[in-house]
Figure 1 (cartoon, rainbow, N blue to C red):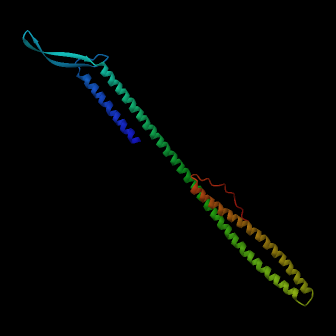
Figure 2 (figure 1 turned 120 degrees about the vertical axis):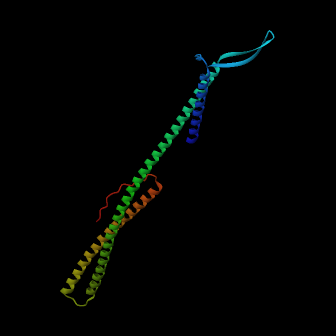
Amino acid sequence: MLTDEASQIQEVRYCLKTLREQMAARQNSTNKKPPANGYKVSVTLPTTIVANGNTVGTELETHVCSTEESAKLRELSKRLYAQMKETEKRHQEEKDRLQAESNEFRRRLDERSERLKLVEGKVVERDKKVEELERLLGGMEREAASLRDNISASEAELLQWRAAKEEGAEKEQRIEELEKELAVLKQKIHHLDDMLKCQQRKVRHMIEQVRTWHIDISENPHPTPKKILPTRLE
């Protein structure tokens, strides 16, 4: 579209130049200053005149003021000039529109790039938190397994003492110690199980949050990361 309008502008400018040259040529071809209302054109008309039986050659110099033709040329010049200006205006408007679109596209691209960097930074941060939680979960699971082994061993010993035939203070004391030990171990394992479930929920939430960010990046031209709440490790 801009190429077509540029061609039109060149064509109009060429027409105006030609008109000016023609009008200047007309003016320069006159022998006297033309009247204010037109151009004076000197025309030499060779004429053969017969007078008293003799052939006489005369030259008749005629001065013609073509006011109507001059007005038409001026009107055409004005019309072509107005057409050129209108075409230049449309050309500039189209250029400005394309420039504005280009600037807007660049702005959105820069904004998207910044948001992607922000999301990438949050993803890296979340990955570190997830790794930290996974290490914590691994330690808690090992501790829970050790507690269960201790509970199993204490329960087995308690059964043995209860099944023993001999009676006495030593037996009663050991049974009481084992029962207290089992109660403490069971309380610890219960608390540890609660902590494990809590940390597992945190890990699942972080993984889901990262997955949501990836979806936002792929589907939303301007992804806005959700507000990240600090995670307290217990």
